[in-house]
Length: 328
Image 1 (spheres, rainbow, N blue to C red):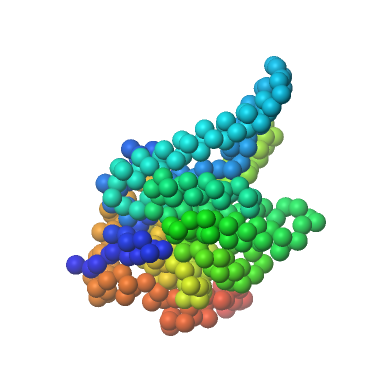
Image 2: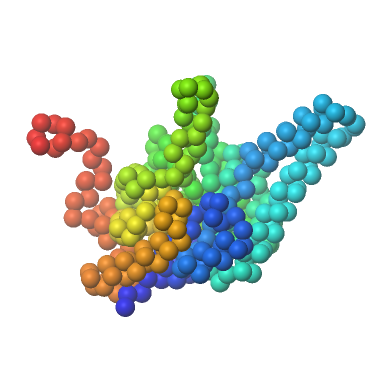
C-alpha cells in the first residue's frame, strides 16, 4: 500500500488533506470530528482584524448615543479586542489538546502592526503553525501597487521574527508580477505559501437593489488558476506550497500534488458532501498511487511541475489558439 504521508512546513502529516479555515474548524468538537474523519491537519477558523474593529465600532457608537465618560472609548476598544483574542487563544489550546494532528491557527490581517504580539500568544497557546491570510484590495487609484505589496512583506517579516513556529502566507494571485512577489514573500522567512485565498464576492439583488454575497463555496472549475501557478513556482521557491480553492475530489487533489503542492486544503467539498469526502478522497489517492507505482507521496509530488512536465510550456500559454483561433 502506498505511503500517503507528507511534510508541510516541517510538520509531519499522515496525509496531504488539510481542513481549511472555515466554520467547520471553529470549535474543538468540530476539529475532533475532522481528525476522526481522516484530515491530516486543520486550519482553525480565522480571527479577523476587520471583525474586531467592527465590533469595537458598534459598541463605541452605542456608548456615544447613551452616555459618555473619560476613556470609555479606549476601554471598550481594548475589552472587545481582548475578549475576542482570549476566546481564540482558548480555541487554539482546546484543539491542541483534542487531536493528535497539526493544528494551524489562522489570522486574517490587513495591517503591518496589528498581529505581531498576538502571533506570539498563539504560539504559546499551542498552535503548531500559523497561517496569515493576507489581501489588500487595490481599490485606491492613487496608491501605488508597490505600497500594497509592502504591507504583505511588513506583516510577514514582523510575524516570522516574533514566533518560532512555521508561518504560512495565504495569498491571492492578484499581483502584477506574481512570480516576483512570491519570491519576495518567501524571503521573509515563511515556511509555506497557500495558493490561493478566496474572497467575499459581492453581488446585487436587482429587485431590492441591495448588495449581497455571491457564491460562497468554490467550484471545481476554480482549480485551474492555482494549478498553473503551483506548477510554475513549486520548484522555484524555498518553501512548501499548499493548494487551496477548487479541490472537490481526489482527481483535483492528485493534480495539485503532481503540480508540486505538498498538501491540499479543502472546505467547500466538506459542506457539499460531508466529512466522509475526506476518506473517499484518500482512498482514491491510494488507489491512484498503486495504479501508477508511486510507492510514496514524495515520488508523486512535483512530477508534472514546470521543468519536469512533458510539455512545460503549456503552463505559460494564455490564449486559446486551438479553440478560438479557427483551428478546432
